[in-house]
Image (cartoon, rainbow, N blue to C red; front, side, top):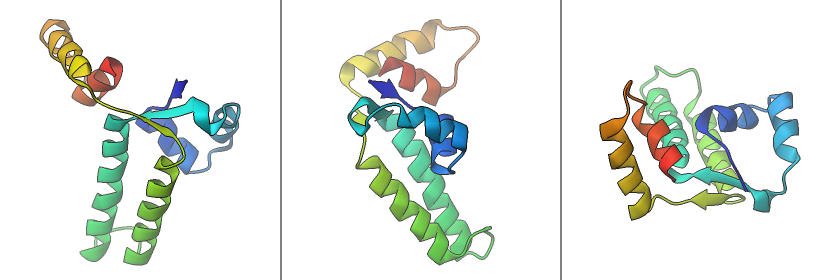
Length: 112
């Protein structure tokens, strides 16, 4: 099983050839995404919709919703790695011990 982080997944979704080719080496059944990454990507897509609605975005509302829809569809083709009580326990332990601090999302992804 191969888990993609938000940066790699974003490059795949943008169609960056090197990332797309690397991901294609694995069947969809071998591809996974931590739920924390799903949240991060969907928050970004929703922010794009809000910016477009306010006239401040780089995208039209139609295009922003199109990207949102494509993202939701993409997540349906891969395994989503859930955030369990065990993962949260690890996260809490590591968060209190690690110096320098690691970003919350990165630490949660590692705990999964």
